[in-house]
Length: 144
Image (tube, rainbow, N blue to C red; front, side, top):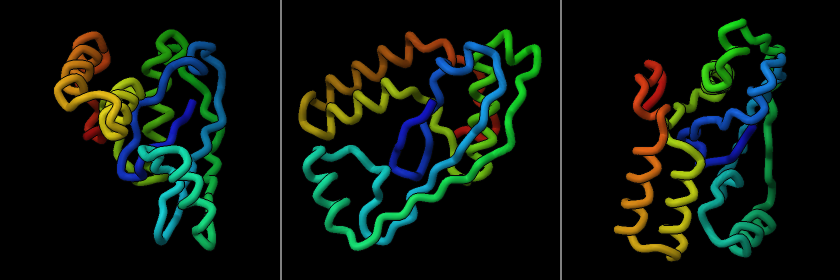
């Protein structure tokens, strides 16, 4: 599981790898920067590549966390398992978890890149939120 965002917050993890209910090795990734944040991808690809290539130095930091062994409850509930692992990464990065999904992020990208109007983006985001059962649950105290 993983995706990049703007560095100010994380979107919720997907549950794919957590469905197996097996131990995982979390790794937190940081992109320290002065001018251009490599994790910020809501720009056209050619601009992203140009800015990355013309920045004198591009850094990445990897922080390996201990192997996370899921509890029986987490083995039975991939959403719980993914949230608990993501909270560990949140603690390391000191970056809050935004309680929306990657699908919301893609709607935002479409709007920023001029592919859809603001009204279309809001309607699509509302539909995604209404369909997402996780968003109706109480967020953890660490979530925005």
